[in-house]
Length: 510
Image 1 (cartoon, one colour):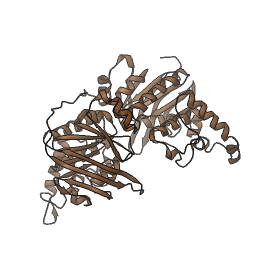
Image 2 (cartoon, helix red, strand yellow):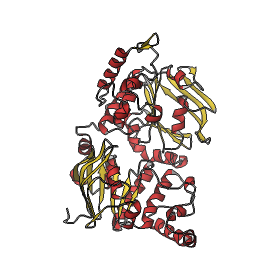
Image 3 (cartoon, one colour):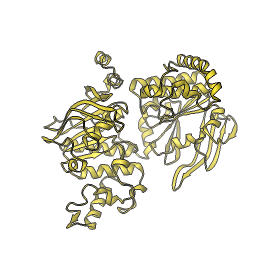
Image 4 (cartoon, helix red, strand yellow):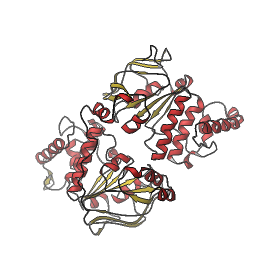
């Protein structure tokens, strides 16, 4: 470690009400390195870096940058000091061009108009230098998610930076786009930049980092050089115990068709077409995965299947019965369980207790209610059993579910849906917001459900999740299914090409 690190974070603390986001974090970043911040969602990675770039103000502690103690009041202050951050959720105005986004708020209307040609030239030069393929006159909303990611990165470079912070930048990218981005980090370091890479993906962190700092519960638990560690050791640091990297699987031939989707079309809440003629079958004793970059109709497909979004045409058949157009309560009554993408919107009621949330679909059914009266004793026993079996960290069954971490909320939703003894389980983003240890547990539970004869449709943007437990994977692009592959990591390139809509190239790669 150098005597004067490029960036030093000393005993930083930050609270949001009762939530401790940073609990005395100390960290040093060396100039000219790729330093990864590894940790699960909620570990404190993004909040820590948001304090570096002026979006959040620390309650205590000191930030020393280039030898000077700094405290930024806004992101503009940080940019003036050549610190830029690309956030997980893009900060672009959709109906403006790329160039207009870059100069937004940078001066008077007259100066902006007179400088636009110079701005275009600068964007083209930077785009060519870093092979980012960004067009200055493109309208942002017309760009793919991967293209918007490149626009965000080039925007930071456009304003000039020495320190670049990338917050989960590969979450919305295809495998090929991910490779391109990881290569770009190396190019930036060669140009004298320093990069902080925030991630929870072990393989990517191991590929590009010089050093890795692991965060857990708002603290840095260790910093290691990449050559002195491995994925298993990093996983142990992240969760505080040993984690199995491969799940045991017992392949069995699938049984009868449980769910059949026939030429289904539906629209998004905006009224625009979202699902375009999707057909697929899910059989008893199999897990079918749906891969795709976020925003390609997966959300609308799951909502349509569960009765939360109207179907324009086509059919959904469950156990031989047409359930198209039924409301969610009627679908739930037909041994259909749904673990939704947005648990707060479609999975739980935050002010209610754990007990009340475990019987949301069955509050009027035996044994939880008799003669219109709730059986509190039975409900309590049922909830305590689920808490124990699914290792939900909570005070007791009467605690409001809003007081639980996101991961524990997710585990309770999974527990409730599986306890309903379904024939079919629809899962959208199973492991979102939960740590590696909890992910291992819920994925093992999905395999147990599969082996007991359940039919499972798993929608995920995490390819490792799909590879780990699926029997086959279909790929969605622009609301259509472009192809199907086995869960074979050797065919990752082919999968990535399908995710990008390149069906012909994918066929050649296969």
